[in-house]
Length: 460
View 1 (cartoon, rainbow, N blue to C red):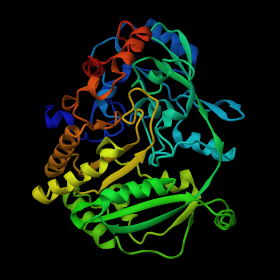
View 2 (view 1 turned 180 degrees about the horizontal axis):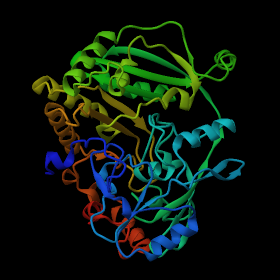
View 3 (view 1 turned 120 degrees about the vertical axis):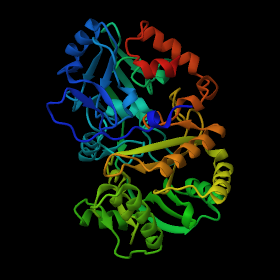
View 4 (view 1 turned 180 degrees about the vertical axis):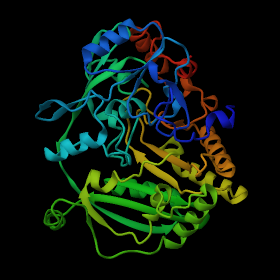
């Protein structure tokens, strides 16, 4: 089992811009010396840098994944920043091609301006790069869609020799390229399928968690998009269920100049649960600012109201806050049994937690390394926020560790871009296409140029 201090590192204080060390976005891991970072301006330069690299190479976008995904150790290793590769490269009738370094909010804004959207519901944070989001399995909510990677039609990448490959969805290795953890090469462009924009009306509610096992399945089967937050200590569930808007609702949105419509009537049912959660967060983090980012992520559940908007206005409403976030996918058919087991565990041990359990379900994915490969999946999310001094609540971390162990025992698969203890999982058993993925990776990178220490251990 991985040491808890290694798995959940302390956050470092803000560094002087002149410091030689480059940290990840959460500032809890040193990635490399800044002199190891190369900022490329175009695809040709990227080819040259990769081909000439003598050591290991990793590709950096918004640096939002856990630090070990990008960390480099040896002189001669190279961290390549692709953030200059951004914007629209091509527009077709049913697809748009974006440069890989384009941040998701730019993708969503561009598509919205075209009166288009992706089939996939967005995650809550939109500051990741497109390449980073598809390479780690970023997903939203709703059984009628799956991960962002499943909206890709073509992926353009540079392999370890500096050669360009255009991998399309008709090719057998596409399922490997869809979610490759940066181990096949450097993605430079992604073609995403699109459809006309749909407006959604999202109904927010609070209910008892007594019947969560069956309610979760019902919500996801009845609604186009569904997301829930489970407060075990209060036996409450806060739910967002959305369907396509009616003509009258669409007209109301247009009359609001295309901005999110928040309906006037508010509901206070979650207020007491939220106040208790906020107090626990304050005790754990010692953050003085009552309007600090961690608190705002929970305060939004108070005095909630139904809303009308496009899918990005409704669901892409996260607040990027340094945190330890674990998310484990469980086959949807097994989710009720896992919820029942978690209830029993909670009643027996009363673990300390300062944020509700997040429940998001998706349809099957075609990507070999996606936790939802070929089966509808429920993702259980757990969060602990950093304290003011960069520390983490010991009780909160114990809860994360116990929750992950429980879900791993149930056959859970972790979200690759978040935190997880790799020693808990038997990858070839969990992923039937593990060997096939390894064969594709070997073709694109026979010498392991794109494997840092963590990725080498993970894929060994």
